Amino acid sequence: MSLITSLAKNAKQAARTLAVLDESAKDAVLKDMAAAIRNSKDAIKQVNEKEVARAKEAQLDAAMIDRLILDDARIEAMAEGIEVIIDLDDPVGKERVIGTRPNGIEIKKMRIPLGLVCMIYEARPNVTADAGALCFKSGNAVILRGGKEALDTSLAIAGLMQDVLEQHDLPKALISVVPDPDRALMQELMEQRDSIDVIIPRGGEGLINYVTDNSKVPVIQHFKGVCHLYVDKDADLDKALALLLNGKTQRTGVCNALEGLLVHQAVAGDFLPQVAKALAEHDVRIHVNEAGASYFTNPDVIGEEGYGEEYLGLEIAIRVVDDFDAALSHIADFGSNHTEVICTENAQSAQMFQRAVDASVVMVNASSRFSDGSQLGLGAEIGIATTKLHAYGPMGLESLTAEKYLVNGTGQVRD
Image 1: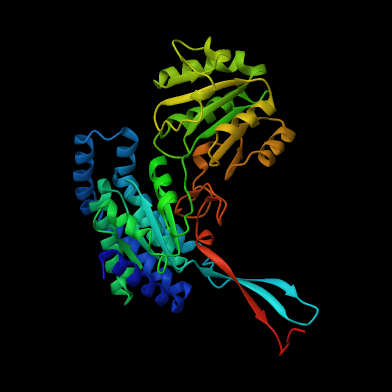
Image 2 (image 1 turned 90 degrees about the horizontal axis):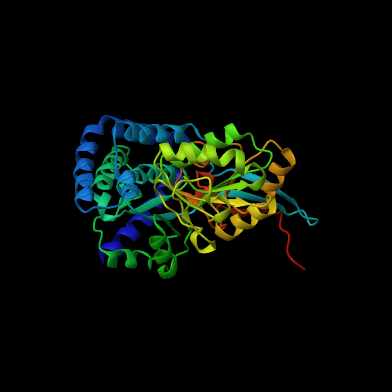
């Protein structure tokens, strides 16, 4: 039996042990996991610093390196993320009534785990803790296949969590890491449809496309984040500028950072000079259509083909639009179904924007950076799904479950 087949079979079998654990038992394990990560921060950082140094020597891009780094604050955030999950209600076993049929059959639906989840991701060692904890509380086993850049850090974090599992007489296979970054093993992993129930890829466009095109296991896509801020004609421009700067410059290498700015032509003359000054102070490179080019110094003037990029850096694509409908059309053409924001004081326009825009998160007068499981009260997220089967948006505990029908009768037979 190959390494991958053995890993998958063991994880699938381990998942069955969670069926007999109640919520309090799960929470006790998670509490110890959070403590183990917090108490081992120096050891985690020591491993991580070596990987960051190698990434810099290899001249990986800044966004990749940013996602790779684990400092005290990010390690503490991992531990706190697990503790937030402890405080969340376990969805497994929750029932809802569908109704009673004329023949007396009673129908309900009950939340159940997905089974065995496989995460394939790049340079995000924090995913190891987030995914491990979320899957554990929602009753799922998980196989983690991270990129080679973060493999040692991921193994260190998973090792701490596995130690806790064994201390509680649970199989460490509940949280497994593929120990070899060989791409051939990833392909074999994607063929384990007898064991793995769903694959969730997180990373760049190339990784998402590769997994989607080659997997024999159902895939929940967590695609790129081409997020826009639309500044409406009825916007409060001070709010708009704050939303822009937070969304674009607070942290650039994340999927909920702003990559596009749309400005209604009625406020462009007042707003874009402020934008030019503020973004210049942050050394943001400007790509803009001809209608907005005059407000900037030496911008990159672009046409239709220049929009829709995920920069993950200090760059942004700006477009002056004729009206509200033009903004909606642009988002439909160039958005990635991740997060879209409108800044407006017009309640009707805000409502229309939220109804019309097809994105997993649609915001009014709030930063795109809030498009995050922890910020939306889900605890740590396993990712942000940009497809609609079966989850859409930040995936927390409930998104890691499905529903099965419960049918109760008194001996009824079908005519």
